[in-house]
Image (cartoon, rainbow, N blue to C red):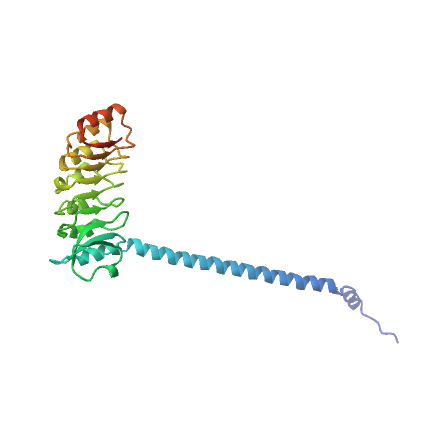
Length: 272
């Protein structure tokens, strides 16, 4: 007897779908996986590269921040020794000139190169270096310091108070600094200064040049180039009969103003 299929079973069988995978589909699938794997590998390498650059950049930023901004207290100078001051200068990436007992003068930029024998400091150059004004409190104790350069620094009123007490200062460089008449008046040793430059100090105006002329009457070399001194303010320089060289370029003074200044200072070489 022929078996009978239930109608429900027939309907179920008729709905069965046989799916056959072609070799081409398998190849495409494998190739796609390889491509995806390669892309993921490239992305991972890129991420690692970016992380490495970020780590290196962070390390360099921390290194330079420590190099330029690390606060180092000013030295405590004991009687008869200036070594601590010299070390402080070179640690702030400055240049220090020292004179040894045999009369020789040499410049140094590293503490390990300083002479073993005793010495005195004759010159300090802190051009464009970073430090706190309060760290300059040791300056008045340097009895042989004759030249000081604090150009392009943040020296203001507090720093000027210390500079103004250096007993034998002859040369003071204040180029491209924020200067005012009030801060200049703090230079109590101004009468002994013979060489000064305020080149590029835009805040150096008529009031400032009048103050400087008053406190530094014995100037021999002076530069006020590229400042805010007007032709009217220029007249404050006329009483400085000791001037041998005056540089006042880029101040927009007229030829007539230059002639007046030349007549007032006949023994001075002018650059206007």
